[in-house]
Image 1 (cartoon, rainbow, N blue to C red):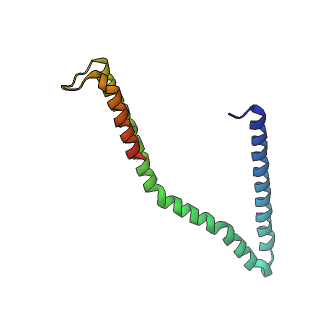
Image 2: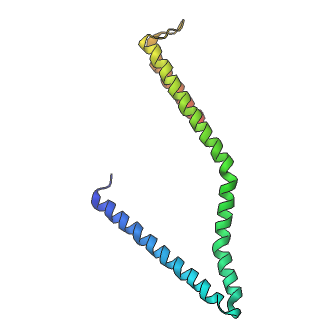
Length: 125
């Protein structure tokens, strides 16, 4: 755990980095605006705009293309989370003796539950 002094130092450093990035962006876009005023520098403006917006466009397209997989991952995590909760509840009831299964001793529930949860965790990763 970081102490408060180190947390403040990290926060100040992060703020400083963000300020520098913001200043550089303002300079960059100011340069684009200033160069856009003169007809002889329009090709430079086009190159500058392309260099900044092309990677953003590519990153956005990649993010949009990844959304179905991300949605599927969220569904799988959700299903496994509630499946593990159900199994824990089920085995806890067996362990307490409220639920009985033929041939399954209540003291086996904890060990069996640990094994089943381990296998589910292995399958969900």
